[in-house]
Length: 151
Image (cartoon, rainbow, N blue to C red):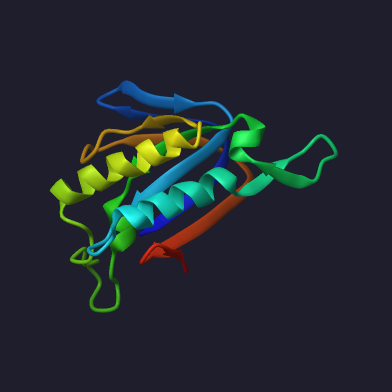
């Protein structure tokens, strides 16, 4: 499992010119699920994301978590994170989790974020989406989790 975490001032996702999710300050999460990912993986990722301290406190130190800061989450499934570009010029996505399984695990991931007391908005699974964001910093972190452990 890979999650690209982007700290944002605001963000929104649209499908067919309709806003399907929008947040103010918080994280945009691009979530790549791969064959073999488990509930333990998404649970660990949700816990790590909720507690990651990359927001400034009142003294200007990077010391607050998303939850402490009152931030929100825009979570977007992104199978293209599983791209293999080692051979040829066309990416292979054979490592991406099958869509039926990925849809279920993506829902579990978002439920785990909500259990961390986070407001979670999402895109539309398997839809062509437009994502707009105001990247803050910029701060972009790639989180990898396998076998219930952060790599």
